Length: 150
Image (cartoon, rainbow, N blue to C red; front, side, top):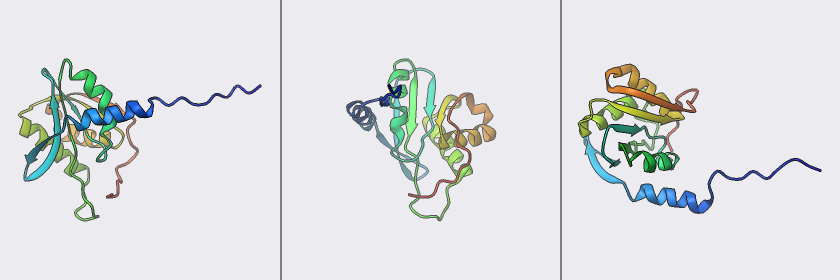
């Protein structure tokens, strides 16, 4: 008798689509340094910033945004993407982008959450602007930052 079991997905398709729809309903457009940046800014209280992963992977944070926005001001933005290899957007540029988002919202310091490649951006930001970081939550940090344009 086999002891193997069929893996159960963490969430089903309907739940996934509901999470995506939830986030899609929250996006607002904001111009920062001449760049149109979709942003979520909901809730009240101390700011909690979710550092974005690749464009359209924001659903990774959907459950946390829903939960924490009940007691916190929750911010997430859709990062500016390049569609070519030039100009290259590296860690210093991503950290500057995060700083510009905070500046545009009048946030001096916040708590941050970052997953995967976004964790590397957050480390770069924290090294450059430690006074702006109350805490860092790092989930599954990437090994390096070599994301090709898509």
